[in-house]
Amino acid sequence: MSKITKKEKQTTIKPGQDVVASMANDFKAELQSLIQELPEELIIDLEGVEMVDSVGIGVMIATHNSLLKTGGKIKVINVAEDIFNLFSTMRLDRHFPIEKK
Image (cartoon, rainbow, N blue to C red; front, top):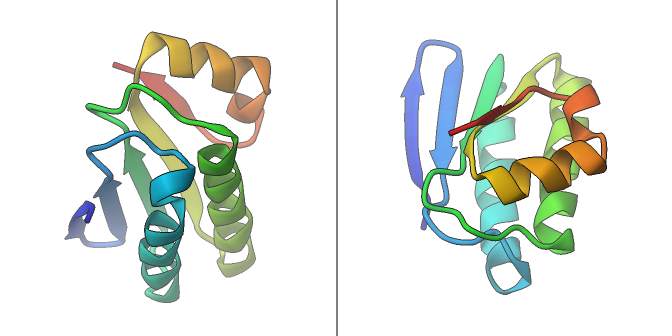
């Protein structure tokens, strides 16, 4: 279960564990629930996350696409160096902001 904090039009979700296939369905359900609330900005805080696999990346891309339809945006923060390099290689940083730790 992720830690979720809300203030005004900004919602932050912190999975607190690796974003991989074994937890992706639960994480995706949490994100979809938050999207229903129409946040202007959804922040995914990856503090404490050491690994993101292809399924986890897919969940983030799907969230980004869903938010675009509602006029919202996504931002990923506290990204470990290895994960940041992976996101950059995949050019995800051209679609939404990604900030290193």
